[in-house]
Amino acid sequence: MEELRKRTRAERLTEGLTVAVATVFAGVLLAGSAVVFGATAWRLVTDTGTTAFSGLSATVVFLAVVVLPVLVARLVFRRSRRRGTERLTAAVPAALTLLGTSVVPFVALCLIVVYAD
Image (cartoon, rainbow, N blue to C red; front, side, top):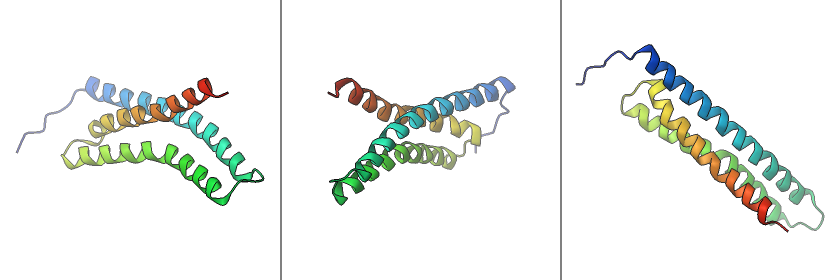
């Protein structure tokens, strides 16, 4: 078995700051995308002449945009914890994964805004 070494305060502080900053940025990106996609989905669902399928599909797309980055980050965190790493050390790759996957819906939203007529 490998011997667990004591981590310094600076290492723990760096990991904590990385997790906090990445989580805040990911939350802002997801919140902005969720608000825009949610408002669009709500408008499609409540608009007259909208079929039930299109209303359901808009809602499903909205939920996928919000939930998928969180699920992927949770999988990364659990995999890191299974390897025996400490909770904070396992949270760093999970937070960075959350940040990376929350950029995708934000970029999609920006492309929609730029190329929409």
